[in-house]
Length: 403
Image 1 (cartoon, helix red, strand yellow):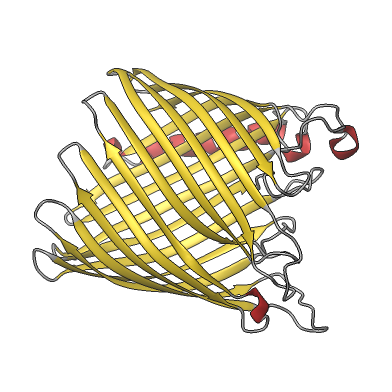
Image 2 (cartoon, rainbow, N blue to C red):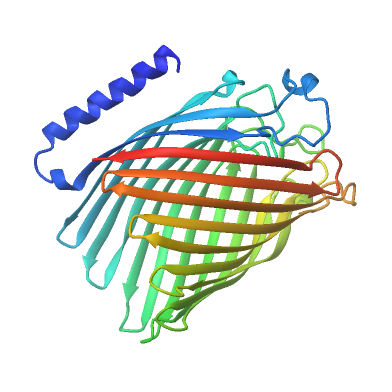
């Protein structure tokens, strides 16, 4: 680990220690954590099998070992009807073979769970998340491309009576990348949402929500007309939601919605389609459970050939609690991702990706302050477009100390 990164982490640790000694009141609500982990990925850049990788990445293998060191602090406390939550974390990612990808992520989450009365309440939240863009889509192999997501949102719920809830809120968010990324531009947006929910005595519920979003691109998006740029967009989401408390041990959640997105300066980018999800949680026993889910996701993917992607994702995940201190999880996921839209006014390309992921993980907590974790994962993707298929295996081990 470079000396400068070590110094940063040491300074953070000293700062957290000073804060702990100064924060006498509510000390039990203030917690610190430190973790160390190592990830081994056989195909970091998600390259197709059988190709010569040297011209692309300067090495004969795309395998990589990443050492992850993290320091964090969290604070949670109730003040009458109010609750304050704060989580701050600094994580150092050290790449062994491709050191230019190493970076220091500074993330936080702050939330005020407010309550004006027991019947009028909500949350004010601010978050920041920094990460390295996935090489599933980004193929700038010799450049580090960091993504920063910032979001602030305010939500409110008013209980009209024992059954009916009125909901509303607003949010602001921004996304920036240190390097241009295919299919996605830097942007900022503002959203308003409103909805209604009916809650039944059994715990089941049904609701409706509408969200409108106005967005602005913060990097120039050229369009075929000379001198013009795709500068902004509007988006409307309508969503029906339902929760079904089937039994004490089984619960199902459903959503069905429609998204419409328009680009005033470039209507060829417009799209609208349906989205939804279904999820079932079954606690077979006190130590065994399983979750099965299907989701349909819509995401903008703005290139010369496509406007958006539609992904159908199927997953199942059994969980076994072997002992009070040990939990094992298995996750199987199958996804079909269709690339859609005709920005040129005609079908210029076709692409469908099929992904299969399988992972098994184990968490062991020998002491209240120590969590040991290990996982194995295999990821495979095939594509109708050449050069986008890959196969990768990853192993991850970590230890987290909390005090």
